[in-house]
Image (cartoon, rainbow, N blue to C red):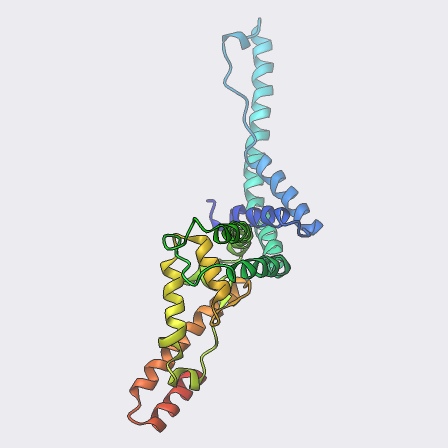
Length: 278
């Protein structure tokens, strides 16, 4: 039975993404890919097609020889299918593991290009009004349209880069969280006792998250908002880092719940400190 361990699709997609970004793909990955192709060729070796009337020879002796030859071809094909299938799991495992080991480095190598695009986006965001909803922008203002076109170009390139990063991340399990699109490219401030007690999440970080979610159908505005936000740091993450960022949001929630459980300021401080240290 072929199970997930035989599937190299996600790893192959990650390698394709790395090549699109002109990143180094080690020779051992290509060697393992060639092995996988060899295995697949063997596992899918076809048996001879069924004979037709035109394949019937002139004599019984010739027919016996033809049958013997076809039987040999059948045995060879079936044996290749069986042995090739036996090799699928170990070869796929080897290939997938080689790619998994490389993915974090590939994602890290995307950061300089990501930073450059974010810088270009931030430069244009300063030329645009505070309200980034496309329905509220004055499209008759040439300064607005010029800045928007440049921002749109940077945002489009960012989307392409992030999609390639996503293809890489899927090869090692993906990002996991509900807001994985955000945490793959951005991090929130870490929760602190003072931040929790000062309602930083309620008054500043939380509204920033809601605004980001509300702009889901407007990718350019979404990127511009992230580039502007003082509460969000744009930085690519490996899947492990993205999950850590999601966990940071959970720690904010734990701290807030602990704060509300305290009956005095001192109790709240102690409860929040304990919750954040857990």
